[in-house]
Length: 232
Image 1 (cartoon, rainbow, N blue to C red):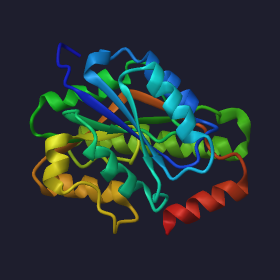
Image 2 (image 1 turned 180 degrees about the vertical axis):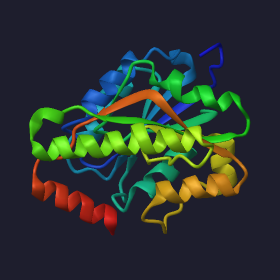
Image 3 (image 1 turned 45 degrees about the vertical axis):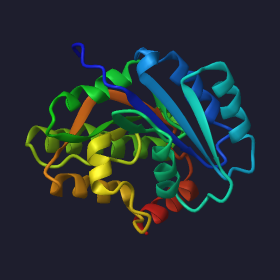
Image 4 (image 1 turned 135 degrees about the vertical axis):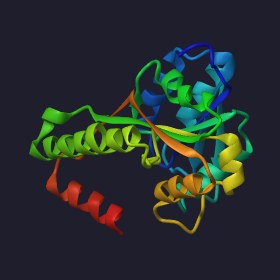
């Protein structure tokens, strides 16, 4: 990845994520990116469980972890991320959902394309961790492989428009500010930002070897609820 090491802020919006936030923050403490160039910002979005408490414990232990507590939050990810940006310092802004688990060198991989000033956005690859759990998780795994190994790869190779997926990706701060940050009126804020980035004259890039792991839904009911939400 050469010596290109810009300052990076990782934004983690979290609403009632006590079950998973510890795993992600533990992982953040193990990342190989130089810690003096890394800032991890947890946005505790009006959680009523121990999310904020767990994040505060990590902030006491690690100087590069900060926590913002939003008392009147819980109205959506976009509002939480816009609040987070106000307290961030990185040249590159990356986002991770609280239930994701990244590779140790994922930051190096995700920031590499930004050496080209024409690149405004990047997206890494989401991989299912619990493929063998059920038939449903196997189907989700196939979907993820199709979406990331085939679709996103093709878009990137053919110089089309890879999609920033709302997690495991991010933007150059300069481009994000120019676009006016996250749009609170948008349900599909990730697609909206991807399109606005390209309309602003910048490229979106997909980094296939920047892997991040997720637990897929394992029951038909959970699958239905998730897809209904996405479709809406």
